[in-house]
Amino acid sequence: MDHTVTAKDGSFNSESLGKNDTFTMTFTEAGEYEFYCKPHNFMTGKIIVK
Image (cartoon, rainbow, N blue to C red; front, side, top):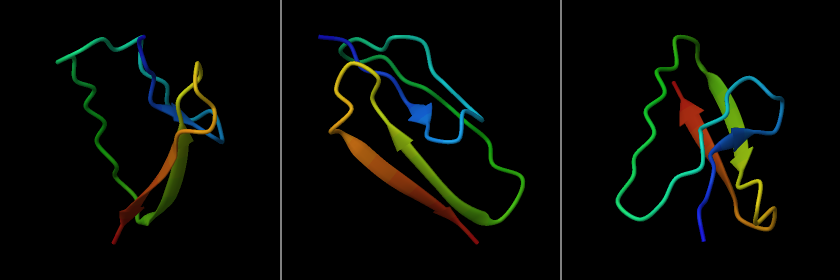
């Protein structure tokens, strides 16, 4: 099944990503950015930018 990289605050969202697909996001401000996978909302993570 495909996955997404979706910001909890709605600030970014990838298209559906299959095996070996990639998503690139450039963060320009320090902070913590929480994300989840739309089809599997139990799959979560946090990006910390310093």
